[in-house]
Amino acid sequence: MKLNLIRMDRIEEYLLRHLLKCFSIFAITLLPFQVLAQKEFYTPKSLIIPLHDRENQLHISVGKGGGYDLNLSYALTDKLAIFSAATFDNGTKKRLSILSDRYNVERNDLVLKGGLGYLFKEVNPYFPIIEAFVGAGASRINNYWYFKGDDSGEETNARYWTAFGQLNAGNKIGRSEYGVGLRLAYSHYTDFDFYDTHPNNSARKSSYENLRGLTADPVVSYSYTLYGVKLNAQAGLAVPVFTSSVNRIDTQTTYEGTSEIRTINKSKEDVYLFSVLGRLSVQYNLNFNKQK
Image 1 (cartoon, rainbow, N blue to C red):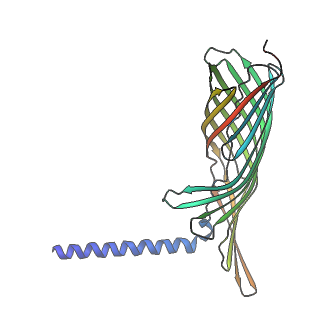
Image 2: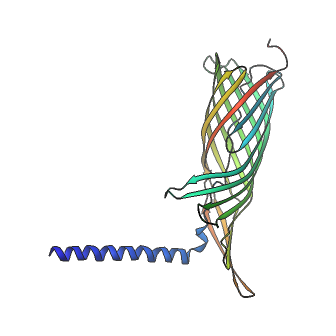
Image 3: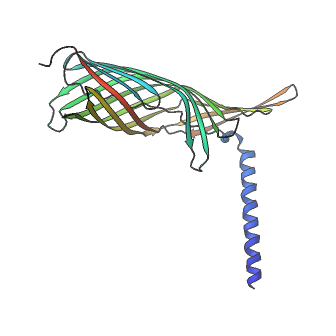
């Protein structure tokens, strides 16, 4: 009886293993378009938190967070400010998937943004400096990801613009500077194409149409002043508030001799805009007049 139970366990294990194998082959065969998986197509940058405390003050910030960046903010008066920021991400990022597979992402991204700010002072003793910003930006995404040891992968080319509103609050105590920020950002993709680079006789290309979404981006910031220069760290998240179902168009092209066979599949897909925000920077405030 015990021997029969052992045999039954082995038979069940054998059947389960082959059933999973058959299911995998079935999924890959019948759902070839869904093999392409997007990675790091939404790349919002950390918030600009100058915490201006006087007029005619230029805030300069150079850092690294999702690329190398330069942030500038100038307080025109004790109430109004303007700002601009540029981030360039060019390099190879090493990643680890949820299945512990290692892969690389080669990036060539560019983000530009700018806007206006309104400054409040002495609002309350805990956060005496409060800033409200509105602005817009444009992002270019060009990345190529592949598993380690594999000579093929997937390339993504996308463009999107963003309009945002942001509220900062902070305080300066001795050499330390504390800040919190919340940004609401609406992003709309004008182009979004991705395709595999497998060296075979077929090619797959996909695209999203009219992808857009709204995110809430809370962050915390801390600076320490050393020899007149602020060393700053910022961390937060970009969390989706809403997303829409977008059109996905998959094109499979197969070559048989001199013939080209093209198959197009259209479907609906929910795409969520989400990202981790983080930045380390060196900052300096240049004051063009004495504080009154």
